[in-house]
Image (cartoon, rainbow, N blue to C red; front, side, top):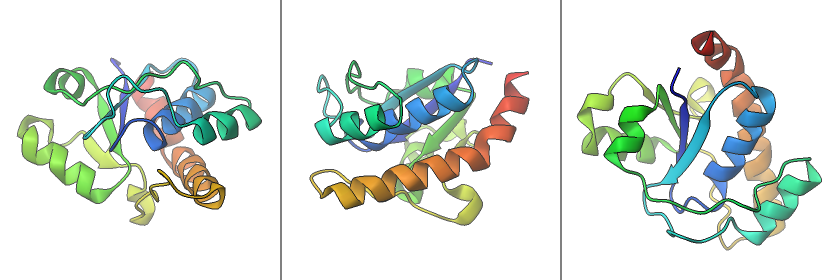
Length: 145
């Protein structure tokens, strides 16, 4: 298994956090992240870093990167934060059909975007991500073995 690619918009809030949650849940799985409109070169949002640390995860070294065809091609599964991001990826990279899903696919849920919003919105995004990772955990573990 090449790995799981987590995708959000800016690659400084949701996808780095989703990556950390999945790496924590399944340490043997390769996980990366990127953004459809990444704030390339920026570190993770300071509040995301703080909330991750409060949960025992360190995303302080994360650097945002833009989604590329190479990232999509290399991944076994691509998990997006919203249906819109999923659709954008499938439109840009039609060959990825069948391996691009929304992280909240099981419940038809888009992960709220906390960028430039209050702590309560970050907390909600974290809770949604953690819940959705739990929904994918067994499927991903099966793929990895």
